[in-house]
Image (tube, rainbow over all chains, first blue to last red; front, top):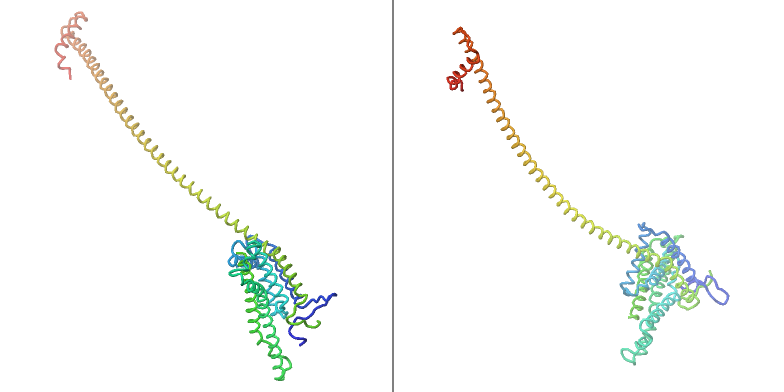
Length: 232
Length: 170
C-alpha cells in the first residue's frame, strides 16, 4: 500500500499539472465509446442486423427515458443524458476489468455534478427569465433566501459525493477483501493466494455491476429531474 | 507508476474530467445519438408513409371493386335481356315460318285439287268423244249406210248429252 486508496499519478507535466490514473482510464473509456459509436452508426441499414438492433434499443431507451422524465419538449437533452449514462455506467463497471473506476475520484464526480449545476441554472434562467429565476430564491418567504442558496449549493455536492462514496466504498472494500484473502491464504501456508479466486466475484457483482449501474442511473435521473424542475 | 494522490482532494483531474466529459458528449452526439435517432425517425416516417399509402390504395381498390361488381351485374342483366329478346324474336319468326308453310301447303293443296278437277273434266271429255266415235262407228255399221258424218256426229253427241250427262257424272 502506497499512501492510501487514492489514484496513482501517471505523469506530472511541467507547471505541476498532474495526470492521474483517473484521467487515463477516462481516456481509455472515451476511446472505447468512440469506437463503439463509430461502428454503431457506420453502416445503418433499413433492415437492422443484430448489432444495429442493440444500438437502436440503447439509443431509443435513452430517448424514451428522457422523454418520460423531462417531457417531450426537453428531448434535446437526451444526447447529454445518454453520454452521462454511458460514461458513468462504463466507468463504474471498469473495476471488473481491473481498472480503477474514474468515478472513484471526487474530481470526476464533482466535475460532472458541477456541469449539472451549471446546466440547471443556465436553463432555469433561459426558460424563466432572470427576474423570475431570482424571485424563486425568495419563495415561499423572503427570509428563506439563505436556506434556498444553501439548498442549491447542496445539490451538486450531494450528487458528487453520492456517486463518489458508492464507488470508492466498493473499491476500498474490494482492496481490503483481496488483501485479507491473500493474508488468509499465506497464513494457511499456501504460496498462491488461492482464496482470491472465486470468493470476490460475488462482491464484484454487487459493488461494480449492481451498485455501479444503479448509481449511474441515479446520477442521470437526478440530473434530468433537476434540470426539468428548474425549467418548469 | 508514481505516487498516489489523496483519496479526496481536488486537483487538475477536475478540469481534465470536465473537458473529457464535454469532448465525449460531442463525440457521442455526433457519432451515435444524432445519426441513430435521425435514422430511426426517418424510418418511422417512412413506415408511416407506406402504411398510409397502402391504406389509401386499399380504399381505392375497394372502390374499384364495388364499381366493377356493379358494372358486371349490369352487363349480366343486359345479357339476359338480349338473350330473352332473341328467344322471343326467334319464336315469333318460327311461328311466322310455320304459318307461311301452312298457307303455302294449303295453296298447293288447292291448286292440286283444281288440277285434279281439270284433269278429270278433260278425261271425261275425252271419253265422251271416244264413246261418240265408237257409237257412230257402231251405228254406221248397223244402218249400213253412211250419212253425212258431220250430221251424224252432232246427232250422237246430242243423244249422249241428253242421256249420259247424269250417268257420266261421278
